[in-house]
Image (cartoon, rainbow, N blue to C red; front, side):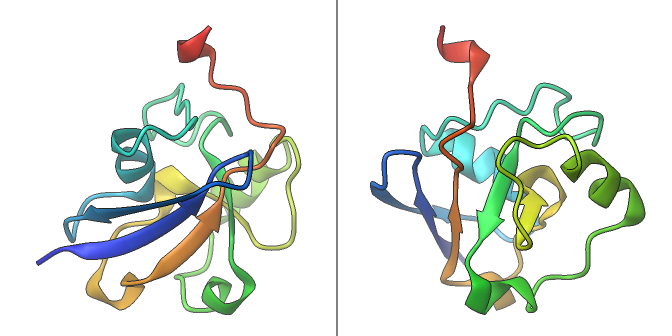
Length: 111
């Protein structure tokens, strides 16, 4: 079973991809070529995988932990619906999820 995800890159281009349940949004975005650095490799020790969840999806996600909220304080361009993509597990309920990669994002792997 594949879950369809939609990313909006920093330039406004829509990128639709698929992921398997149990994976996380960071890996799905990286596999689709999006500038999500994920420096800490999902250990929640950075905010380089920050995404902005579409408002209509935000309340459907499990709430962020206190640790994730603390890391989001360091995220460039953080908003009310910001999350760390490494902390969002792909589930069938997220089929159609839309997130944006903030324009303030810098993927140092691409320099």
